Amino acid sequence: MSKHAWWQEGTIYQIYPRSFMDSDGDGIGDLEGVRSRLDHLVWLGVDAIWLSPIYPSPMTDFGYDVADFCAVDPRFGTLASFDALVRDAHARGLKVILDYVPNHTSDQHPWFREARSARDSPKRDFYLWRDPGPGGRPPNNWLSEFGGSAWEWEPVTAQFYCHSFLKTQPDLNWRNPTLRAAMLEVLRFWLERGVDGFRVDAIHHLIKDDQYRSNPVNPDYRPGQPPKRSLVRLYTTDRPEVHEAIGLMRGVLDAYPDRVLIGEAYLPIERLVRYYGVELAGIHLPFNFHLIHSRWEAALVADMVRRYEQALPPGAWPNWVLGNHDRSRIATRVGPRQARVAAMLLLTLRGTPTLYYGDELGMRDVPIAPAQVQDPWEKNEPGLGLGRDPERTPMQWAPTPNAGFSNATPWLPVAADFGVANVEAETADPASMLNLYRTLLAIRRHHPALAVGSLVPLDTDADTGTDLPPGVLAYERKQGVDRLVVLLNLTSDPRRLVLPAHLVGATILLSTLPGAGPDLGGATVTLGADEGVLMAAP
Ligand code: TEU
Image (cartoon, rainbow, N blue to C red; front, side, top):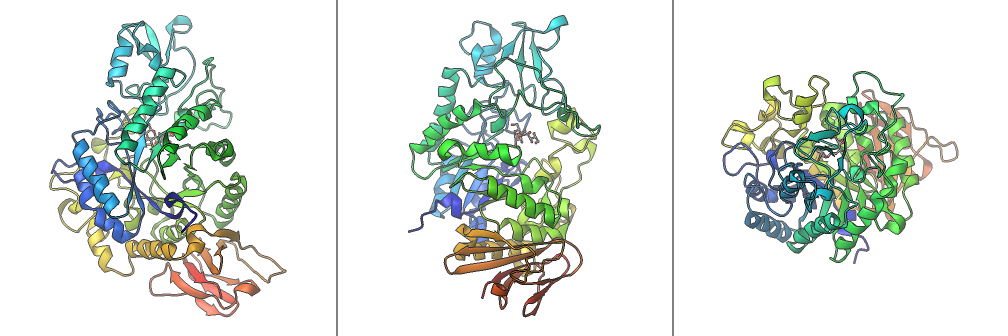
Protein backbone atom coordinates (compact mmCIF):
# COMPACT_ATOMS: atom_id res chain seq x y z
CA MET A 1 0.00 0.00 0.00
CA SER A 2 1.21 3.47 -0.91
CA LYS A 3 1.93 5.82 1.97
CA HIS A 4 0.86 8.78 -0.11
CA ALA A 5 -2.57 10.34 -0.32
CA TRP A 6 -4.41 10.51 -3.65
CA TRP A 7 -3.93 14.28 -3.73
CA GLN A 8 -0.18 13.80 -3.45
CA GLU A 9 0.21 11.20 -6.19
CA GLY A 10 -2.53 12.47 -8.44
CA THR A 11 -3.11 15.29 -10.90
CA ILE A 12 -5.90 17.85 -10.53
CA TYR A 13 -7.84 19.18 -13.53
CA GLN A 14 -9.64 22.53 -13.20
CA ILE A 15 -13.00 22.82 -14.93
CA TYR A 16 -14.57 26.23 -15.42
CA PRO A 17 -18.14 24.93 -15.60
CA ARG A 18 -19.50 27.74 -17.78
CA SER A 19 -17.04 26.83 -20.49
CA PHE A 20 -16.55 23.07 -20.42
CA MET A 21 -19.59 21.42 -21.98
CA ASP A 22 -23.15 22.63 -22.53
CA SER A 23 -25.75 19.84 -22.42
CA ASP A 24 -28.95 21.91 -22.61
CA GLY A 25 -28.27 24.32 -25.44
CA ASP A 26 -28.15 27.67 -23.63
CA GLY A 27 -24.55 28.46 -24.60
CA ILE A 28 -23.39 27.96 -21.00
CA GLY A 29 -21.70 24.81 -19.75
CA ASP A 30 -23.35 22.72 -17.03
CA LEU A 31 -22.95 19.72 -14.74
CA GLU A 32 -24.59 17.27 -17.14
CA GLY A 33 -22.09 18.47 -19.70
CA VAL A 34 -19.22 17.72 -17.35
CA ARG A 35 -20.71 14.31 -16.58
CA SER A 36 -20.93 13.48 -20.27
CA ARG A 37 -17.18 14.14 -20.64
CA LEU A 38 -15.85 12.19 -17.67
CA ASP A 39 -14.63 9.35 -19.88
CA HIS A 40 -12.46 11.80 -21.75
CA LEU A 41 -10.82 12.88 -18.49
CA VAL A 42 -10.19 9.28 -17.52
CA TRP A 43 -8.67 8.68 -20.96
CA LEU A 44 -6.48 11.76 -20.46
CA GLY A 45 -5.28 10.37 -17.14
CA VAL A 46 -6.11 12.97 -14.49
CA ASP A 47 -7.19 11.98 -10.98
CA ALA A 48 -9.44 14.76 -9.72
CA ILE A 49 -11.64 17.49 -11.09
CA TRP A 50 -11.99 20.87 -9.39
CA LEU A 51 -15.13 22.73 -10.36
CA SER A 52 -15.14 26.54 -10.19
CA PRO A 53 -18.32 27.69 -8.36
CA ILE A 54 -21.60 26.00 -9.30
CA TYR A 55 -23.79 27.71 -6.67
CA PRO A 56 -26.83 29.94 -7.24
CA SER A 57 -25.45 33.30 -8.23
CA PRO A 58 -26.42 36.53 -9.99
CA MET A 59 -23.18 35.87 -11.95
CA THR A 60 -21.78 39.37 -11.56
CA ASP A 61 -18.43 37.56 -11.07
CA PHE A 62 -19.55 34.37 -12.83
CA GLY A 63 -20.29 32.35 -9.75
CA TYR A 64 -17.72 33.85 -7.34
CA ASP A 65 -20.67 35.90 -6.08
CA VAL A 66 -22.57 33.19 -4.21
CA ALA A 67 -26.23 33.70 -3.24
CA ASP A 68 -26.65 30.27 -1.62
CA PHE A 69 -23.73 28.10 -0.55
CA CYS A 70 -25.76 24.91 -0.34
CA ALA A 71 -27.47 24.59 -3.72
CA VAL A 72 -26.72 24.46 -7.44
CA ASP A 73 -27.45 27.29 -9.85
CA PRO A 74 -30.21 26.22 -12.28
CA ARG A 75 -27.93 27.22 -15.17
CA PHE A 76 -25.55 24.48 -14.04
CA GLY A 77 -28.09 21.89 -12.90
CA THR A 78 -29.60 20.69 -9.65
CA LEU A 79 -28.43 18.94 -6.51
CA ALA A 80 -29.59 15.74 -8.20
CA SER A 81 -27.40 16.37 -11.24
CA PHE A 82 -24.54 17.19 -8.88
CA ASP A 83 -25.03 13.90 -7.03
CA ALA A 84 -25.08 12.07 -10.36
CA LEU A 85 -21.82 13.74 -11.35
CA VAL A 86 -20.13 12.74 -8.08
CA ARG A 87 -21.44 9.19 -8.40
CA ASP A 88 -20.22 8.81 -11.98
CA ALA A 89 -16.89 10.44 -11.23
CA HIS A 90 -16.28 8.17 -8.26
CA ALA A 91 -17.28 5.12 -10.30
CA ARG A 92 -14.43 6.05 -12.66
CA GLY A 93 -11.92 6.66 -9.88
CA LEU A 94 -12.09 10.45 -10.23
CA LYS A 95 -12.24 12.70 -7.17
CA VAL A 96 -14.42 15.81 -7.09
CA ILE A 97 -13.22 19.07 -5.55
CA LEU A 98 -15.51 22.08 -5.10
CA ASP A 99 -14.72 25.76 -4.95
CA TYR A 100 -15.45 27.25 -1.52
CA VAL A 101 -15.80 31.02 -1.41
CA PRO A 102 -15.55 32.11 2.24
CA ASN A 103 -14.33 35.69 1.82
CA HIS A 104 -17.60 37.13 0.54
CA THR A 105 -21.14 36.42 -0.58
CA SER A 106 -23.26 37.91 -3.31
CA ASP A 107 -25.16 41.05 -2.29
CA GLN A 108 -28.22 38.93 -3.14
CA HIS A 109 -27.40 36.34 -0.46
CA PRO A 110 -30.22 36.32 2.16
CA TRP A 111 -27.63 37.11 4.87
CA PHE A 112 -26.63 40.34 3.19
CA ARG A 113 -30.15 41.36 2.26
CA GLU A 114 -31.03 41.05 5.91
CA ALA A 115 -27.79 42.65 7.14
CA ARG A 116 -28.15 45.74 5.00
CA SER A 117 -31.77 46.33 6.01
CA ALA A 118 -31.15 47.41 9.61
CA ARG A 119 -28.27 48.11 11.95
CA ASP A 120 -29.77 45.83 14.57
CA SER A 121 -30.30 42.93 12.17
CA PRO A 122 -28.95 39.68 13.64
CA LYS A 123 -26.97 39.25 10.41
CA ARG A 124 -25.49 42.77 10.49
CA ASP A 125 -22.20 41.61 12.01
CA PHE A 126 -21.80 38.84 9.41
CA TYR A 127 -20.32 41.62 7.23
CA LEU A 128 -17.87 44.51 7.74
CA TRP A 129 -19.61 47.84 8.40
CA ARG A 130 -17.98 51.19 9.19
CA ASP A 131 -19.03 54.76 9.70
CA PRO A 132 -17.84 57.26 7.10
CA GLY A 133 -14.52 59.03 7.46
CA PRO A 134 -14.18 62.83 7.54
CA GLY A 135 -16.33 64.56 4.94
CA GLY A 136 -18.39 61.44 4.37
CA ARG A 137 -15.52 59.70 2.66
CA PRO A 138 -14.84 55.95 2.93
CA PRO A 139 -13.41 54.93 6.32
CA ASN A 140 -9.93 54.22 4.93
CA ASN A 141 -7.98 53.87 1.66
CA TRP A 142 -8.55 50.18 1.00
CA LEU A 143 -8.97 49.32 -2.68
CA SER A 144 -11.09 46.73 -4.40
CA GLU A 145 -9.19 44.11 -6.42
CA PHE A 146 -11.42 45.05 -9.32
CA GLY A 147 -10.99 48.82 -9.16
CA GLY A 148 -12.08 51.72 -6.98
CA SER A 149 -12.60 51.87 -3.24
CA ALA A 150 -13.22 48.68 -1.27
CA TRP A 151 -16.03 50.53 0.53
CA GLU A 152 -19.59 50.97 -0.69
CA TRP A 153 -22.09 53.31 0.92
CA GLU A 154 -25.32 51.70 2.14
CA PRO A 155 -27.87 54.54 2.33
CA VAL A 156 -30.59 52.74 4.29
CA THR A 157 -28.41 52.23 7.36
CA ALA A 158 -25.91 55.00 6.62
CA GLN A 159 -22.70 53.00 6.85
CA PHE A 160 -20.11 51.68 4.42
CA TYR A 161 -19.57 47.95 3.83
CA CYS A 162 -16.27 46.41 2.78
CA HIS A 163 -15.84 44.50 -0.48
CA SER A 164 -12.41 43.19 -1.50
CA PHE A 165 -13.79 42.41 -4.96
CA LEU A 166 -16.94 43.78 -6.64
CA LYS A 167 -19.43 45.87 -4.69
CA THR A 168 -21.83 42.98 -5.37
CA GLN A 169 -19.45 40.79 -3.31
CA PRO A 170 -19.62 42.08 0.30
CA ASP A 171 -16.88 40.65 2.54
CA LEU A 172 -17.87 38.33 5.36
CA ASN A 173 -16.76 38.95 8.93
CA TRP A 174 -14.85 35.84 10.01
CA ARG A 175 -14.37 37.30 13.49
CA ASN A 176 -18.06 36.66 14.14
CA PRO A 177 -18.49 33.19 15.73
CA THR A 178 -22.01 32.66 14.37
CA LEU A 179 -20.85 33.43 10.83
CA ARG A 180 -17.88 31.12 11.25
CA ALA A 181 -20.10 28.29 12.42
CA ALA A 182 -22.50 28.83 9.50
CA MET A 183 -19.65 28.79 6.98
CA LEU A 184 -18.15 25.62 8.47
CA GLU A 185 -21.58 24.01 8.19
CA VAL A 186 -21.37 24.65 4.43
CA LEU A 187 -18.27 22.46 4.26
CA ARG A 188 -20.09 19.66 6.09
CA PHE A 189 -23.06 19.94 3.74
CA TRP A 190 -20.88 19.11 0.73
CA LEU A 191 -18.64 16.62 2.54
CA GLU A 192 -21.77 14.66 3.45
CA ARG A 193 -22.66 14.64 -0.25
CA GLY A 194 -19.35 12.96 -0.96
CA VAL A 195 -17.06 15.70 -2.22
CA ASP A 196 -13.37 14.94 -1.86
CA GLY A 197 -12.17 18.40 -1.00
CA PHE A 198 -12.26 22.13 -1.55
CA ARG A 199 -10.29 24.79 -3.32
CA VAL A 200 -10.67 27.76 -0.99
CA ASP A 201 -11.08 31.02 -2.87
CA ALA A 202 -8.95 34.07 -2.06
CA ILE A 203 -7.95 32.64 1.32
CA HIS A 204 -5.33 35.33 1.98
CA HIS A 205 -8.10 37.98 1.86
CA LEU A 206 -10.25 36.28 4.53
CA ILE A 207 -9.43 38.46 7.54
CA LYS A 208 -8.89 42.22 7.51
CA ASP A 209 -7.14 44.37 10.11
CA ASP A 210 -9.34 44.75 13.20
CA GLN A 211 -8.28 48.41 13.52
CA TYR A 212 -9.06 49.15 9.88
CA ARG A 213 -5.73 50.88 9.31
CA SER A 214 -5.10 52.36 5.86
CA ASN A 215 -2.72 50.48 3.59
CA PRO A 216 0.71 52.03 2.91
CA VAL A 217 1.49 53.46 -0.52
CA ASN A 218 3.51 51.11 -2.74
CA PRO A 219 6.72 52.93 -3.70
CA ASP A 220 7.31 50.48 -6.59
CA TYR A 221 3.99 51.17 -8.30
CA ARG A 222 4.27 52.02 -11.99
CA PRO A 223 1.47 53.55 -14.06
CA GLY A 224 -0.09 50.91 -16.30
CA GLN A 225 -0.08 48.31 -13.51
CA PRO A 226 -3.50 47.44 -12.07
CA PRO A 227 -4.53 50.38 -9.84
CA LYS A 228 -4.88 48.03 -6.83
CA ARG A 229 -1.07 47.71 -6.90
CA SER A 230 -0.69 51.36 -5.89
CA LEU A 231 -1.02 50.26 -2.25
CA VAL A 232 0.73 47.49 -0.32
CA ARG A 233 -2.05 45.23 0.92
CA LEU A 234 -0.59 45.11 4.42
CA TYR A 235 -3.86 45.40 6.35
CA THR A 236 -6.18 43.62 3.92
CA THR A 237 -4.44 40.34 3.05
CA ASP A 238 -2.36 37.67 4.78
CA ARG A 239 -3.32 38.77 8.30
CA PRO A 240 -2.05 36.53 11.10
CA GLU A 241 -5.59 35.65 12.25
CA VAL A 242 -6.34 33.93 8.93
CA HIS A 243 -4.54 30.82 10.18
CA GLU A 244 -7.01 30.36 13.00
CA ALA A 245 -9.88 30.34 10.49
CA ILE A 246 -8.01 27.87 8.28
CA GLY A 247 -7.48 25.63 11.29
CA LEU A 248 -11.25 25.53 11.80
CA MET A 249 -11.84 24.56 8.16
CA ARG A 250 -9.20 21.87 8.39
CA GLY A 251 -10.78 20.57 11.58
CA VAL A 252 -14.05 20.02 9.70
CA LEU A 253 -12.29 18.15 6.87
CA ASP A 254 -10.30 15.97 9.24
CA ALA A 255 -13.51 14.44 10.53
CA TYR A 256 -13.83 12.78 7.10
CA PRO A 257 -11.30 10.36 5.64
CA ASP A 258 -9.03 11.31 2.76
CA ARG A 259 -10.25 14.83 1.99
CA VAL A 260 -8.08 17.66 0.66
CA LEU A 261 -7.98 21.38 1.40
CA ILE A 262 -6.44 23.52 -1.32
CA GLY A 263 -6.00 27.27 -0.90
CA GLU A 264 -5.80 30.07 -3.41
CA ALA A 265 -3.24 32.57 -2.13
CA TYR A 266 -1.20 34.82 -4.37
CA LEU A 267 1.79 35.37 -2.08
CA PRO A 268 5.59 35.32 -2.15
CA ILE A 269 7.03 31.87 -1.41
CA GLU A 270 8.07 32.65 2.18
CA ARG A 271 4.55 33.81 3.10
CA LEU A 272 2.76 31.18 1.03
CA VAL A 273 4.36 28.24 2.82
CA ARG A 274 2.97 29.44 6.17
CA TYR A 275 -0.43 28.35 4.86
CA TYR A 276 0.56 24.72 5.44
CA GLY A 277 0.01 25.67 9.07
CA VAL A 278 1.85 24.88 12.27
CA GLU A 279 2.60 21.14 12.21
CA LEU A 280 0.91 21.01 8.80
CA ALA A 281 -2.52 21.50 10.39
CA GLY A 282 -3.48 24.13 7.80
CA ILE A 283 -4.01 23.86 4.07
CA HIS A 284 -2.78 20.64 2.42
CA LEU A 285 -1.93 22.39 -0.82
CA PRO A 286 -1.54 26.17 -0.78
CA PHE A 287 -1.63 26.80 -4.51
CA ASN A 288 1.82 27.64 -5.84
CA PHE A 289 1.37 30.13 -8.69
CA HIS A 290 5.03 30.98 -9.10
CA LEU A 291 5.32 29.24 -12.48
CA ILE A 292 2.59 31.59 -13.71
CA HIS A 293 4.46 34.66 -12.58
CA SER A 294 8.05 33.66 -13.32
CA ARG A 295 9.73 34.93 -16.49
CA TRP A 296 10.30 31.99 -18.81
CA GLU A 297 14.06 31.69 -18.33
CA ALA A 298 15.74 28.53 -17.16
CA ALA A 299 17.92 30.22 -14.53
CA LEU A 300 14.94 32.03 -13.01
CA VAL A 301 12.71 28.96 -13.00
CA ALA A 302 15.52 26.82 -11.53
CA ASP A 303 16.11 29.38 -8.80
CA MET A 304 12.40 29.61 -8.03
CA VAL A 305 12.07 25.81 -7.80
CA ARG A 306 15.05 25.72 -5.45
CA ARG A 307 13.68 28.51 -3.24
CA TYR A 308 10.28 26.84 -3.08
CA GLU A 309 11.74 23.43 -2.21
CA GLN A 310 13.89 25.02 0.51
CA ALA A 311 11.03 27.02 1.97
CA LEU A 312 8.67 24.04 2.34
CA PRO A 313 8.17 23.05 5.97
CA PRO A 314 9.24 19.48 6.80
CA GLY A 315 6.68 17.04 5.40
CA ALA A 316 4.79 19.68 3.44
CA TRP A 317 3.66 18.51 0.00
CA PRO A 318 4.56 20.79 -2.94
CA ASN A 319 2.27 21.68 -5.83
CA TRP A 320 2.48 23.51 -9.14
CA VAL A 321 0.02 25.45 -11.30
CA LEU A 322 0.62 26.63 -14.89
CA GLY A 323 -2.68 28.34 -15.54
CA ASN A 324 -6.17 29.10 -14.28
CA HIS A 325 -9.31 31.10 -15.05
CA ASP A 326 -7.71 34.35 -13.83
CA ARG A 327 -4.46 34.35 -15.79
CA SER A 328 -3.34 34.40 -19.41
CA ARG A 329 -2.97 30.85 -20.79
CA ILE A 330 0.47 29.21 -20.86
CA ALA A 331 0.46 28.74 -24.66
CA THR A 332 -0.05 32.49 -25.02
CA ARG A 333 2.52 33.40 -22.38
CA VAL A 334 5.36 31.27 -23.76
CA GLY A 335 4.22 30.33 -27.27
CA PRO A 336 3.06 26.96 -28.63
CA ARG A 337 6.47 25.28 -28.76
CA GLN A 338 7.53 26.24 -25.25
CA ALA A 339 4.06 25.30 -24.02
CA ARG A 340 5.08 21.70 -24.73
CA VAL A 341 8.23 22.17 -22.64
CA ALA A 342 6.04 23.74 -19.93
CA ALA A 343 3.78 20.66 -19.97
CA MET A 344 6.80 18.44 -19.36
CA LEU A 345 7.96 20.74 -16.57
CA LEU A 346 4.56 20.80 -14.84
CA LEU A 347 4.22 17.02 -14.96
CA THR A 348 7.77 16.20 -13.87
CA LEU A 349 8.30 18.64 -11.02
CA ARG A 350 7.94 17.33 -7.47
CA GLY A 351 4.43 17.86 -6.19
CA THR A 352 0.80 17.82 -7.24
CA PRO A 353 0.18 19.41 -10.66
CA THR A 354 -3.02 21.31 -11.41
CA LEU A 355 -3.99 21.52 -15.08
CA TYR A 356 -6.33 24.15 -16.45
CA TYR A 357 -8.96 22.85 -18.90
CA GLY A 358 -7.93 23.37 -22.51
CA ASP A 359 -4.24 23.85 -21.79
CA GLU A 360 -3.88 20.17 -22.72
CA LEU A 361 -5.06 21.14 -26.23
CA GLY A 362 -2.64 24.06 -26.42
CA MET A 363 -5.59 26.48 -26.22
CA ARG A 364 -4.55 30.12 -26.38
CA ASP A 365 -6.12 33.32 -25.08
CA VAL A 366 -8.92 34.31 -27.42
CA PRO A 367 -9.10 38.00 -28.35
CA ILE A 368 -12.35 39.52 -27.08
CA ALA A 369 -13.89 42.45 -28.94
CA PRO A 370 -15.13 45.28 -26.68
CA ALA A 371 -18.75 44.41 -27.39
CA GLN A 372 -18.15 40.79 -26.30
CA VAL A 373 -16.57 41.58 -22.92
CA GLN A 374 -18.14 39.64 -20.04
CA ASP A 375 -15.61 39.97 -17.23
CA PRO A 376 -16.64 42.64 -14.69
CA TRP A 377 -13.00 43.52 -14.01
CA GLU A 378 -12.45 44.45 -17.65
CA LYS A 379 -15.68 46.44 -17.57
CA ASN A 380 -14.57 48.34 -14.44
CA GLU A 381 -11.04 49.04 -15.64
CA PRO A 382 -11.11 48.73 -19.42
CA GLY A 383 -8.10 48.78 -21.69
CA LEU A 384 -5.44 47.74 -19.16
CA GLY A 385 -5.44 44.14 -20.36
CA LEU A 386 -6.87 42.93 -17.04
CA GLY A 387 -9.87 41.08 -18.50
CA ARG A 388 -10.08 37.34 -17.88
CA ASP A 389 -12.45 36.39 -20.70
CA PRO A 390 -9.61 35.40 -23.09
CA GLU A 391 -8.66 32.40 -20.93
CA ARG A 392 -12.28 31.35 -20.24
CA THR A 393 -13.46 30.53 -23.77
CA PRO A 394 -15.32 27.31 -24.60
CA MET A 395 -13.51 23.99 -24.49
CA GLN A 396 -12.79 22.76 -28.01
CA TRP A 397 -14.17 19.27 -28.41
CA ALA A 398 -14.61 18.79 -32.16
CA PRO A 399 -14.26 20.52 -35.54
CA THR A 400 -18.02 21.07 -35.59
CA PRO A 401 -20.07 24.25 -34.97
CA ASN A 402 -19.22 25.94 -31.65
CA ALA A 403 -16.34 23.44 -31.35
CA GLY A 404 -18.81 20.81 -30.14
CA PHE A 405 -19.24 22.77 -26.90
CA SER A 406 -22.88 23.75 -27.45
CA ASN A 407 -25.75 23.76 -29.92
CA ALA A 408 -26.25 27.44 -29.20
CA THR A 409 -24.00 30.48 -29.51
CA PRO A 410 -21.56 30.17 -26.58
CA TRP A 411 -21.36 32.85 -23.89
CA LEU A 412 -17.81 33.67 -25.04
CA PRO A 413 -16.48 33.23 -28.58
CA VAL A 414 -14.76 30.01 -29.60
CA ALA A 415 -11.08 30.24 -30.62
CA ALA A 416 -10.50 30.75 -34.35
CA ASP A 417 -8.26 27.67 -34.58
CA PHE A 418 -10.82 25.25 -33.13
CA GLY A 419 -10.93 23.31 -36.40
CA VAL A 420 -7.46 21.93 -35.71
CA ALA A 421 -7.09 22.46 -31.96
CA ASN A 422 -9.82 20.21 -30.61
CA VAL A 423 -10.11 16.95 -28.71
CA GLU A 424 -11.25 14.91 -31.71
CA ALA A 425 -8.49 16.02 -34.08
CA GLU A 426 -5.78 15.95 -31.45
CA THR A 427 -6.74 12.48 -30.24
CA ALA A 428 -6.08 11.19 -33.75
CA ASP A 429 -2.74 13.00 -34.06
CA PRO A 430 0.12 11.30 -32.19
CA ALA A 431 2.12 14.55 -32.36
CA SER A 432 -0.58 16.70 -30.73
CA MET A 433 -0.36 18.58 -27.46
CA LEU A 434 -3.21 16.42 -26.17
CA ASN A 435 -1.25 13.23 -26.77
CA LEU A 436 1.84 14.79 -25.21
CA TYR A 437 -0.16 15.52 -22.04
CA ARG A 438 -1.69 12.06 -22.09
CA THR A 439 1.70 10.37 -22.46
CA LEU A 440 3.23 12.52 -19.72
CA LEU A 441 0.36 11.68 -17.39
CA ALA A 442 0.73 7.97 -18.16
CA ILE A 443 4.48 8.06 -17.53
CA ARG A 444 3.90 9.98 -14.30
CA ARG A 445 1.40 7.37 -13.19
CA HIS A 446 3.79 4.49 -13.86
CA HIS A 447 6.91 6.06 -12.37
CA PRO A 448 6.97 6.57 -8.62
CA ALA A 449 10.07 8.75 -9.18
CA LEU A 450 7.80 11.31 -10.88
CA ALA A 451 4.71 10.90 -8.73
CA VAL A 452 6.36 10.93 -5.32
CA GLY A 453 10.15 10.86 -5.72
CA SER A 454 12.80 13.34 -4.68
CA LEU A 455 14.00 16.14 -6.96
CA VAL A 456 17.70 16.83 -7.40
CA PRO A 457 18.62 19.79 -9.59
CA LEU A 458 21.45 19.26 -12.06
CA ASP A 459 23.91 22.12 -12.24
CA THR A 460 27.22 22.63 -13.89
CA ASP A 461 29.59 20.75 -11.62
CA ALA A 462 33.30 20.10 -12.18
CA ASP A 463 33.32 17.12 -9.80
CA THR A 464 30.67 15.14 -11.64
CA GLY A 465 31.64 16.44 -15.08
CA THR A 466 28.22 18.05 -15.65
CA ASP A 467 28.15 20.93 -18.09
CA LEU A 468 24.81 22.67 -18.38
CA PRO A 469 24.51 25.45 -20.94
CA PRO A 470 22.46 28.59 -20.26
CA GLY A 471 18.76 28.25 -21.00
CA VAL A 472 18.58 24.59 -19.95
CA LEU A 473 16.71 23.42 -16.87
CA ALA A 474 17.69 19.94 -15.67
CA TYR A 475 16.89 17.73 -12.73
CA GLU A 476 16.74 14.13 -11.59
CA ARG A 477 13.78 12.48 -9.96
CA LYS A 478 14.37 9.41 -7.79
CA GLN A 479 12.31 6.96 -5.84
CA GLY A 480 14.09 3.74 -4.85
CA VAL A 481 15.41 2.13 -8.01
CA ASP A 482 13.22 4.31 -10.20
CA ARG A 483 15.36 7.20 -11.50
CA LEU A 484 14.50 9.66 -14.24
CA VAL A 485 16.23 12.68 -15.76
CA VAL A 486 14.47 15.75 -17.14
CA LEU A 487 16.28 18.07 -19.57
CA LEU A 488 14.36 21.14 -20.74
CA ASN A 489 15.60 23.61 -23.32
CA LEU A 490 13.77 26.87 -22.62
CA THR A 491 15.36 28.57 -25.62
CA SER A 492 14.65 28.37 -29.33
CA ASP A 493 18.20 27.38 -30.22
CA PRO A 494 19.70 23.90 -29.93
CA ARG A 495 21.73 23.26 -26.79
CA ARG A 496 24.50 20.74 -26.20
CA LEU A 497 25.13 19.54 -22.71
CA VAL A 498 27.42 17.09 -20.97
CA LEU A 499 25.74 14.69 -18.58
CA PRO A 500 27.22 13.92 -15.18
CA ALA A 501 29.16 10.65 -15.10
CA HIS A 502 26.43 8.73 -13.26
CA LEU A 503 23.87 9.52 -15.98
CA VAL A 504 25.91 8.59 -19.04
CA GLY A 505 23.92 5.96 -20.92
CA ALA A 506 20.47 7.29 -19.96
CA THR A 507 17.78 6.39 -22.48
CA ILE A 508 14.98 8.52 -23.82
CA LEU A 509 11.41 7.92 -22.71
CA LEU A 510 9.85 10.97 -24.34
CA SER A 511 10.68 14.14 -26.24
CA THR A 512 8.41 17.15 -26.59
CA LEU A 513 9.42 17.30 -30.25
CA PRO A 514 7.25 14.85 -32.13
CA GLY A 515 9.25 12.26 -34.00
CA ALA A 516 12.65 13.67 -33.09
CA GLY A 517 14.58 12.42 -30.11
CA PRO A 518 17.68 14.25 -28.97
CA ASP A 519 20.96 13.36 -30.51
CA LEU A 520 22.59 10.97 -28.06
CA GLY A 521 26.34 11.03 -28.02
CA GLY A 522 27.27 9.14 -24.90
CA ALA A 523 28.02 11.76 -22.32
CA THR A 524 26.77 14.61 -24.48
CA VAL A 525 23.17 15.29 -25.37
CA THR A 526 22.02 17.76 -27.99
CA LEU A 527 18.60 19.18 -27.30
CA GLY A 528 16.74 20.64 -30.25
CA ALA A 529 15.31 24.15 -30.16
CA ASP A 530 12.36 24.22 -27.71
CA GLU A 531 12.92 20.59 -26.81
CA GLY A 532 12.35 18.88 -23.51
CA VAL A 533 13.29 15.25 -22.91
CA LEU A 534 12.49 12.78 -20.24
CA MET A 535 15.05 10.01 -19.81
CA ALA A 536 15.41 6.87 -17.76
CA ALA A 537 18.67 6.90 -15.81
CA PRO A 538 21.02 4.00 -16.57
O1 TEU B 1 -9.32 35.35 -7.14
C1 TEU B 1 -8.78 35.91 -5.99
C2 TEU B 1 -7.54 36.63 -6.10
O2 TEU B 1 -6.64 36.42 -5.34
C3 TEU B 1 -7.49 37.81 -6.99
O3 TEU B 1 -6.54 38.71 -6.48
C4 TEU B 1 -7.11 37.46 -8.35
O4 TEU B 1 -5.74 37.38 -8.43
C5 TEU B 1 -7.58 38.57 -9.23
O5 TEU B 1 -8.92 38.74 -8.99
C6 TEU B 1 -7.40 38.21 -10.66
O6 TEU B 1 -8.38 37.38 -11.08
C7 TEU B 1 -10.45 34.58 -6.88
C8 TEU B 1 -11.02 33.91 -8.10
O7 TEU B 1 -10.09 33.02 -8.64
C9 TEU B 1 -11.47 34.97 -9.07
O8 TEU B 1 -11.95 34.40 -10.26
C10 TEU B 1 -12.57 35.75 -8.40
O9 TEU B 1 -12.98 36.79 -9.22
C11 TEU B 1 -12.12 36.30 -7.05
O10 TEU B 1 -11.47 35.32 -6.26
C12 TEU B 1 -13.29 36.76 -6.26
O11 TEU B 1 -14.01 35.67 -5.78
